[in-house]
Image 1 (cartoon, one colour):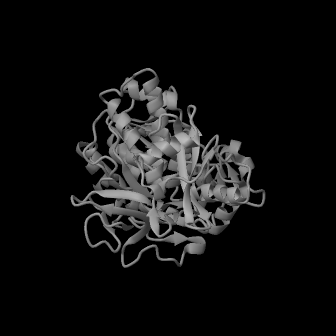
Image 2 (cartoon, rainbow, N blue to C red; image 1 turned 90 degrees about the horizontal axis):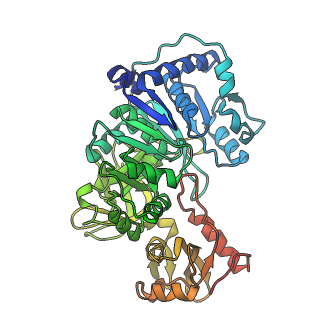
Image 3 (cartoon, rainbow, N blue to C red; image 1 turned 45 degrees about the vertical axis):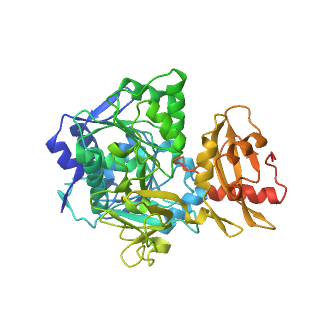
Length: 490
């Protein structure tokens, strides 16, 4: 059995800061009191224990308290992405069979009028019912349900249990360690596993969360410089923007800043090298919705020696490469461990996520002779050109190291002779031409890997957690085949 996270933490360290937002801060005891009040009001709305509700809100204190209240009220939470359209949200709510949509008042317009809605303000104004939270949770109890981004086919509702979240948090702290003054800057959306997992770690570790409603590169860089935070989770584009802010003033990360954890895909080596120059420890990590965040993370002592690696599996986890016979063989990454989802809900409820006890990730990678995992790319993003395998992330890595390139996204485009060829979408931060980039890449890539076209765009398509959406790049590339309206630059 697993102790009720918030009740146990408020009992153990009641006066320690749970989270801060702007100039405000709350202790674990204050968080528990507020969440208990709201849990009683949720019960007063007729939401019985083990009911499934959908939750839609921003990454602010109101949302934090409502999340904790739902957990104390014994509700299953379908975490809704506030960047989706009303039609997309309606599909997820119906697929999940959620009893109602619990929604922040300012986001009411995102919810389809045909769906049952319970506003945060209605909960606040409603009657309260006496409620005693469960002291212990079974490890199989569903805590959250998060829909995958749907890179292929329809999104799937992933069950994440108390055991999944707890084992993920414990594995992480066994790798990263914990200090009394640790403060985790959370600028990732709370509806995403990267943000929600930080709230879970806070309760299990007794650690403060420094919450941001939206990512602010200037503010984050200043906190890292001053040492008011010690850890942060990012994706590559966020890391790059923070580095740019530090580089503008030739500033360093404070010595107390211990860990920058980038996820959501491979990080360009150029970013890692620049972070080292700023005294910023960047530990690449690898995880997914189906694994309740991290599965592998690079240890601090290996950050430079194994640059580009996602490290070794965390303590309770296992990783292997499907079909690999020797170190370095590339294949699909398979995962096993107590952090892996027991299954899906809705339309995918009958689909077993495991294959012979292992979770197929859809990612391609290899394990080197020392047991370190390297992620090469998504299997679905692999470009096969004239029989040669080309990994977009490798090309993006090179392009991102050019000083005039802010961001780069690469995908395949149909070609009459080679079947598919790589093309690049570039967000510039200086003057640069397609010819210049071609010459730059020719020195660093085999000829068959060279992008055959460059398209200069204002921004790349990304999801709510800033992960690059290559499926949209592929649509852009297809538009070019049909003489679309993006600027072709070769």
